[in-house]
Length: 477
Ligand code: GLN
Image 1 (spheres, rainbow, N blue to C red):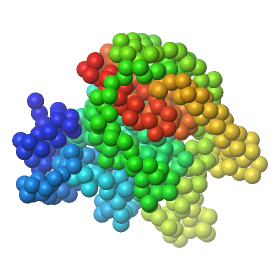
Image 2 (image 1 turned 60 degrees about the horizontal axis):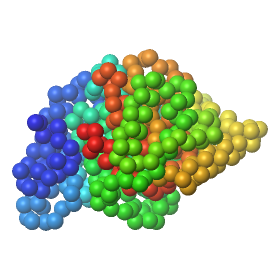
Image 3 (image 1 turned 180 degrees about the horizontal axis):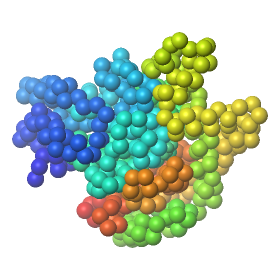
Image 4 (image 1 turned 90 degrees about the vertical axis):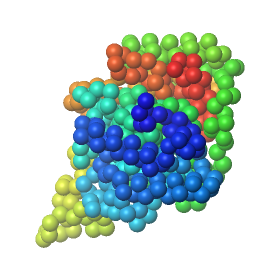
């Protein structure tokens, strides 16, 4: 078995037993990268030298008998939306070029402090806007399971890098599904923690009330381990909850007997859910029932409004967040001379932003404009509250909710237009709108393509998702 076939946990056992060194782990990743990256293109930037140095330091510290965290020496990839000191950061856009941040995002610092060498910065849809990583200004990332198909998005580079063994785990962000959906399409585990569980400091903003950082991993245990590193209060992010996270790894063996699960009717039987996906999810429900979970159907009547609500709130917030890229303060500036400042803004943005990003900025600006604010933005906020209340009511009765992650398996490049891509987020977006947490894990295949089961939990109950996911994974291998 190749080193890169191990999970992060298995590698960490070998590192601790000194059967393998961190430098060897990094070398194994780069050997894999050399072999497959030409096809997959998961990374925008590779940081081989930096990873080597970090690994060498870990090996020295371990040799000196220092006590290190469980993931010390385990190579990680970071979504190129996170600021990395001294390393180019693009957000998948040309508008930031040539941005080299002078500081690290908190999650990057946390992984560094945990001793995890960074192998590189992973590809993404521009400013995390997309569901297939086809909106990146740099390259298309291919699904390692089938190179003709998309890896999902927007954290498609992170998901593909883990699925291909180029990194042992990776970070991503999930504003409307960008961790769970690519995890599902690439056959790995991905979690969107509750908003406020993980710091957003140093994460380039898309939609600030929806963005959240989380792990993409090979299995549920790895997901618990990486979440433990990422989660927790941060004085640099006022929206980060002032709550110490529980022991995520410790809770894995607590089992699921007596847990109550609601099967979300609208997301399992609803329009657009492909039959093989539905069948796989229902068979996962059977397995969980055998394990002692009490499962029954539940209806969330307002959930069908999630997509329109999301596309008003997300575009409104992005139009505000992206206003700063004006050719004056950041990155790209059009060639001078220009007629006036407006001409400078317009030309810079037309050159620097991709079509989808410009479309969303315009939609958001429209929704926030004086004449339409009440009709669109305010209304969307009100409906968001109704969706949140649907979840609150459901979680009074159930510990977890179950649904598919994606209504279909990975599709071919070019098969979906931008509208179809948006509809493909039907199962993931309600979680962000409803301010809860969710995890995707593999639950079967349609031909050779993986299907994802989505497990949802009330705010700050990531431990329950992990427990249920782990029990399912152990029972099904
Ligand atoms: N696909 C959704 C969008 O384009 C979600 C993206 C995300 O979670 N960052 O907005």
